[in-house]
Image (tube, rainbow, N blue to C red; front, top):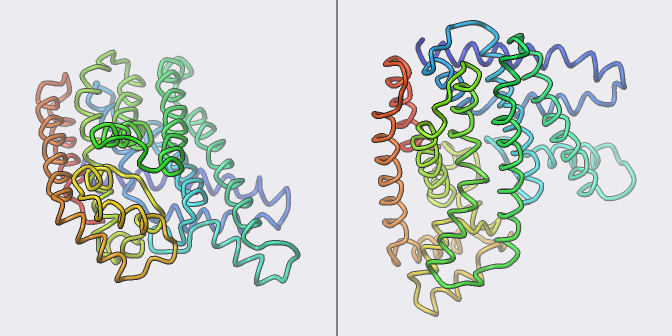
Amino acid sequence: MAASQVRKEIDEALYAFVDRQRPVLSAVSGELAPMLTALDALLAGGKRLRPAFCYWGWRGAGGGDRPEIFTAAASLELLQASALIHDDVMDGSDTRRGQPAAHRRFEALHAGSGWRGSAEAFGAGAAILLGDVCLTWCDEMFHRSGLPAEVLLRARPVYDLMRTEVMCGQYLDLVGQARGAGTDGPAMVEAALRIVRYKSAKYTIERPLQLGAALAGSDSMDALSAYGLPLGVAFQLRDDVLGVFGDPAETGKPAGDDLREGKRTVLVALTLERAAPAEAETVETLLGDPGLDAAGVELLRSIIVGTGALDACEKMIDRYADEASEALAAAPLTAEAREALSDLTVAATARRG
């Protein structure tokens, strides 16, 4: 099945599920309409990578085309939505996918309605609740996909572990931002890579692949990890580079937004590992400044490039992508799935947004 058709099937399953949930919220109160509006805006974007990897994990293990697998796979978009909404609250992000972040939408609703109290606090609280709804719905969508109960049961351990890991990774990210540098260069890079593995790499590629394969009855989890985990790391490292050097028209976020949010990425860790004392002091001073202007962003970019950190990060991306490609060639998958996953490998690491 062509990638465009997989995307179409996933979208249709996702939107059909959300449409079935609308009367549930409407029956509670018409005041919940802004929650659905915010969710609709978020779900309209995205690459659908997680459902695609789940689908090809299923197909690679011999699963056939049936509508239920698209519904089960599409449930991962609701997990992604929950993670993004909560992440934006914690980071204080203003935009997501070129539009106001969910908490900013709710903040504007409060301010525009002339309600009492803090608009900012209301926005954060409402967004957290919307993220919780998405987390609940991802479970509901998965279990109501129509796949047999015994099929869902054998994949449940992967599904549960994936959701636990992403929350743990998010906490490690919070700790990393709060603690600052704190350790020497190599340890700092390894700490950043640990966050990458658990906050992004595992639930983006490794676990969705394993989930699809488990649904199809495969037990080749180690072989899928050998491919999915390094590719997931490469994917997030590319995201880190785009967060600093990406074109806002492609990324949907302002230039240098990761720097304003103070994200302790691998790219930042590599910079601090290589920086002279004065350069490191500049990075520590400017990183996480919400008022960082274009000149400040450009200064940090020049330090990242000048220290060789950008080049080192690009080499890491290539190394992890090569590792993933070698593992893919050896993985016990159908030829069709191997070809599709090879295309996804390129899409995940060579993207511009």
